[in-house]
Image (cartoon, rainbow, N blue to C red; front, top):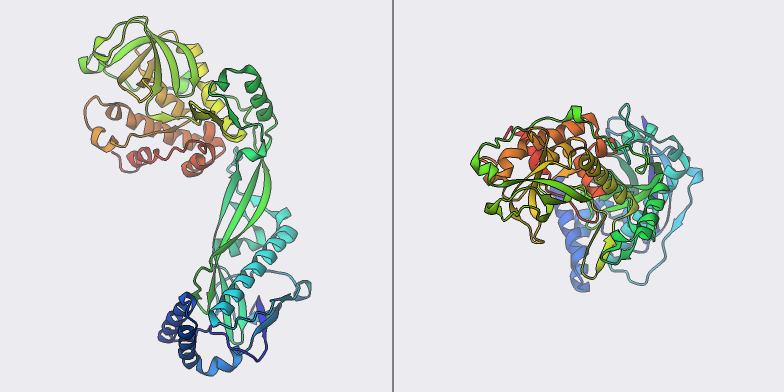
Length: 485
């Protein structure tokens, strides 16, 4: 025998509650249909007619569920082991639980009673579940952390309650001889990264990045970012004898504070030439060479934007020798320090800003090592007039900056919407670089490089550190690997 806790609802003998379900599937279907109709109708006469039909279906159970709900409490009961393939839900004594009361109402419409009961049960479960976790489990929570890594907001192991959250768990309630159940849906960790954590990260003038005072304040806040707030949201559905009640889904949240290890400000940005892998662009091909020009880097705005001076003239793409050009690096999208327009700029949260700085530091190290002599491959401009392309470096320009920052783990790749049409078209950027970039991302993830030290899943990575400007276009690079495209 396994022990469970049932919520026993105490009924008086004054009214009838139109909720019931029995084991017969046809009866359950009819009752479910009537319940749905009753919940949706706003016509009292129609509600009463539906209720009469429900009474007929209820039959022998009618007497047990008659009455108006007045109070309930939690008691321990025994359930045969083979009845439910689940583990004990809670392990607290009935004496420790309060009795909850539901206020009486003058409206005796059946659907109103149903909604009131559902609402009250959801409230009680939320209160008791949260209280139980905070009082009994929170200090025993462990996290499954791969050796050598400390992921932020990992999936928790809840020790003796683990099976409750890893399987379909049920908390059992009762009206007469009929049972409510709470069906567990899942748990989702969420990092709180909004600017309310640090109000100093607000809206700034358009050119705030040029103000050293503002930048100094941002760095100060980042230095103090040693932990993040995380909440775990547990979601449930409310059922009655296996029938899910309409609009009965709900969740309850448990809050934690977890360390950022190492601190983002202290994270050492690695720029290791021994890890670079050549992409071997055929620069002798006139089609390729005609879309490229040699240049030197003048400045780095962030991890995916350079300003360069052309070292040669290439009329086919509008490049003049000694001309100054902005380069928006293609195939990647680093986290943003801020986004804005002519009216002002909105800074990212301290958390996202820390990751954006890591990308910028990688670009700065690239500039220091190779910035005097690079080759830009580009065939078009974006809406801001910037050349869109890649920066190649090395003695024979055999290495791709975009590929290497992905391999180092300091950005997610970004695919164009037309990539499937161009990946097999000779000498397009997708044809030349998407496969190397895809393999570089796979390597970064496997080696836990850069951002992958903190997150082991690309969806979590983009969700948490691409908040101010989402990147949802990395999936094609996973597809390239999975399908060997």
